[in-house]
Length: 330
Image (cartoon, rainbow, N blue to C red; front, side):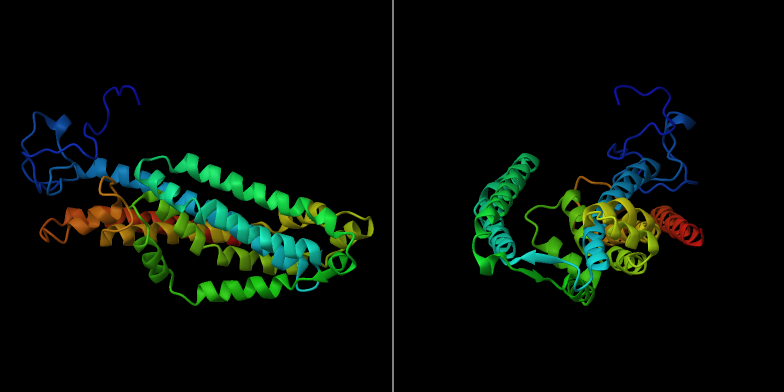
């Protein structure tokens, strides 16, 4: 913002007040007037707790929304493939299968392994977005080239033959592998190898380990929907799989996914708070509810440092869970 007129809280989350350190809401405070009173108290550096709670709310909402957006995209993709095609509905030519497999390996190697040093340097100098986009464009270009070469395989009989892929089996086994590892343990392991503490990494990692439930719910719904009359009618009319899946099946199967997303956002807020409480994942400059809650350990008598951040976490998680329950009852 450019300017604020009579802000309800005249402090920022990083503004120290050395005259009021570890002051509770009901303690005597050294302020010019009631306007500058710390209504929820201060921490060990004199930071206003109310301002810190608002800053932490922004982080919590950002983590919940962005991480579950990533998880939703991944879950929708895998769940749709597993539920709609099953184990025998997806067929692909051997040439396309071989070239796409080679393209994936080559794209990963040249876009991320060869450029690994460039990406690491970009992380240190805040240029990750541009370099990551270059890697993604390179990866997409290699995959496009691999699919373009499929045209030349049509002249070879063995490569032209179409084979079935058990997508349902492969995706469900992948889900079981990810589910077999405790989420918090996997998150701690991945965050530990990150070259720099950043909220961006936390959001991406949470999204990468929280897509399984979305995929499973969508798969179960599509297994029911794909045999309904209007889907059979679409096939009889010669509609493509893409049109049937994205135009008819997926819109009618999205309900359970919204329920899972609401519960997933609550889980993401808890995971981020746990990481912040342990002092990992988020940069030292970030203000989060978990970090505020951890400050109560250094001064056990400062009850407000445990009550208000803990209450904020409890209210947010409860509200998201109630939202999920309300969606499930509709």
